[in-house]
Length: 258
Ligand code: BTN
Image (cartoon, rainbow, N blue to C red; front, side, top):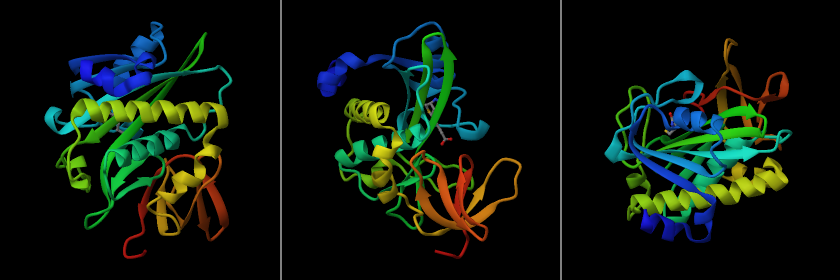
């Protein structure tokens, strides 16, 4: 904890960090703490999650030695415009890992962090943001799961930070870099919105100008060329019906096409 505080430097005062050996899900527990009034900047790190949550109702399985799993509570004013928040978080993690020497990283809409230096793009980290409103405003719980070593996940290409780094950072140094990067980006997002980060996000978009397929809930998949994102973080697809914006879904590369 001492080295973590040192590595956080002037940012240490902005975080209240709790490290648990085990919990169900750091997101679930931090949402409970948010409802009880936990301050912005509260962080929950768990060595093991028994019911880790993934995007779109999936489970998130991670092994304690081979991953870093944590959630950060960030509070916003009642009328805050949070469109693009998850993309801002992805960019923050990307930049923080680059700063630690990780190479060949890319971003996949809306908020996956990929390792692109292997045979195909492989998932390195996932982000799950959950929101709650109360009398004070909006509480966002930003959950992050980073693979330190690639897990075996059926039907998914995965990578570990050890694939991207010549020298692996120590766990506390990694956490400090991610938290300071998040604070910087969340401050910028609060003052200028996602528009201020859009160009940078797009530079790291792994599927920019590629043929992709978007799977959205209960609709048939939509095919188009990925034209990046707009100022609100919506995905732009050039489809047969023209340029269309999408707010949710899973994107994959169209098989056999680049
Ligand atoms: C995804 O499906 O890609 C998002 C995965 C997010 C996992 C992290 S691990 C820490 C936090 N607690 C959770 O239960 N989920 C997030």
